[in-house]
Image (cartoon, rainbow, N blue to C red):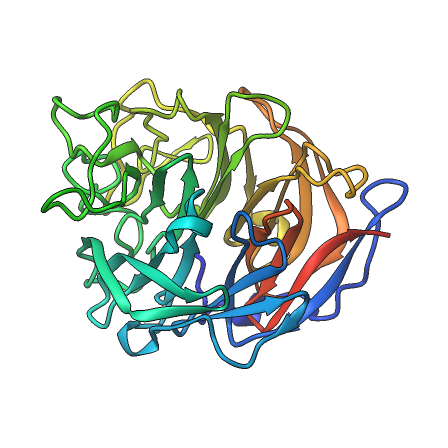
Length: 381
């Protein structure tokens, strides 16, 4: 079962976060606003007073010093298909955003295809919708699920998480095929270069080898949310919440450098277990990267909502821990990520109905969005 942004609404937990404790001092949820089907929250480097909230139907709202502005930052709803799991799914600001004014959006167009487009800002709180420039398009018309949806910058390079194409299993074996951009982590330089819409770093693992040059990692089912862990060192790591099929949800965690050319195993594996059904299931290709953590649907979940390794020291007891949740269960949880296996998985004592995404602002503060409307910031009690 994928992150069904509409169909799974009946699986959500109570909409009133009870407020609880992960450690002495505790964690609580502070509501920062209500929105129309919010699916992502982010900040822009160098603009600490602004918070951007992505709404699935195609708008991006902005809060300035905590107050929601009436006019959206961006409105591309005329371009966006939002049925099923489709929609405007994330935006990303490059490190030079304050100077360049360019940013990027990941969405499904009216035909269902995945698009990454570049836009320019008109003012700190208003984008220029007509500045749209197409960067990348990936066919995805057959099924409305497994769209991926995450954009993240690490330095000047843009990482893009794509789903395997949808339906159940992966009959076309997109995730294992290095000729398909589906079921992948892609890495590009999204800036225009000459007549090219983007360029591929020469250090990408399949440049000059069989496979699409854009591919950085493969073997993913639906990496709806991934993030970079830069806490406590100069060697960044990547944390991927990869949505499972019918049995297990998983967290993949490895050094960014080690993710180059890595095969995360789908659809040979679901979590730690071999995956087989009557339609698909790849024989173990060997050398796959195993998750650091997996949980079964038997504990009440159905679809992982991947999060972030906390870098906000004000969240006592959570610093350095990976925070995640599940769309059906709604309970916020944290664990200690290690390169081989996670430890210390536990609940925070707070829940959110229909949690669609986590996000961080430019000051490293952590947020969680509910598809039902509220967006919360995690705070210490």
